[in-house]
Amino acid sequence: MKAPPFAYARAHSLAEVFDLLARHGDGAKLLAGGQSLIATLNMRLSAPELLIDITRLTELTGISVRDGTVRIGALTTHAEIERSAEIRKHLPLLAQAAPHIAHAAIRNVGTFGGSIALADPAAEWPACCVALDAQFVIAGKAGARRVAARDFFKGLYATALRPDEVLTQVEIAVPGPDYRSAFVELAQRRGDYAIVGLAAIAKCARGVLSDLRLAFLGVGPAPVLARTAMAAVEGKRASADAIAAGAKALAKDLDPGADLYSSAATKMQLARVLTARALAALAT
Image (cartoon, rainbow, N blue to C red; front, side, top):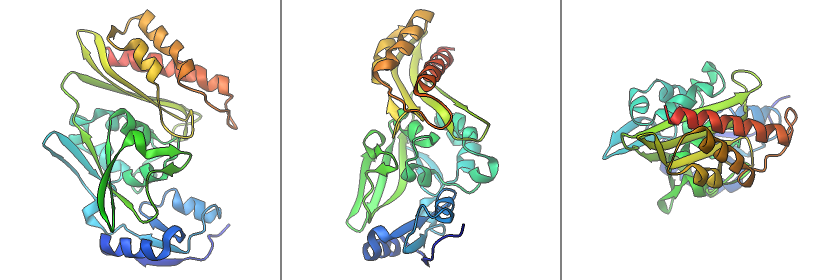
């Protein structure tokens, strides 16, 4: 199948992007890495009037660390994050998650901001950003605003982005030296979308876990922060009993739906398995 007809414009500045978005509204789509957009175009699941190519906007690229905050430009590729020494040092959760994203060819082109803005519930970056309490910098003609990751994802492919806005940057505070992270997921084959995945981070001091965050992917229309499970383990050593309590508490946090490959019961069981693995990893 071929893509429907559309107009094309290569933007040379954010101001130009804002003008085009204001003029075309919902009829415009941004082209960044294009790894999801091109597929939906070819399957005619998306039919924009205009594609706005933002790949030349260098101000949306790069990784920097300043004043205890990591800043990642929206056009930074998955591969750049995977290879970054600064990410491995300051945000190991992202380094752990990156190899799970599709395949190397896609990671070389797909972008951090594109994945976040698409808000696929089975994608890795949204769950990681929720676990890390990331802040998203969103810009439009009226100026810039910040939205917490926990407030950004509204549902299936739905976000807090307005039609005339662009996600420009992600800001993540560097966790303290006692923080540990773990990313685990289960998929049919390496590179497939996850059946269930989990981004986890916690402070571990003398074996006790605190400030625990468990963000699941693949179990709902958006990333799910498992607050009940987090509370069941908070302030405890990651003993067999504490891990079992956290896994059991997931019943109050998750309500996964069945898909073509897995029943709801299977997904819940896999979520419990991943919770046990992640908590054990955080404590070691």
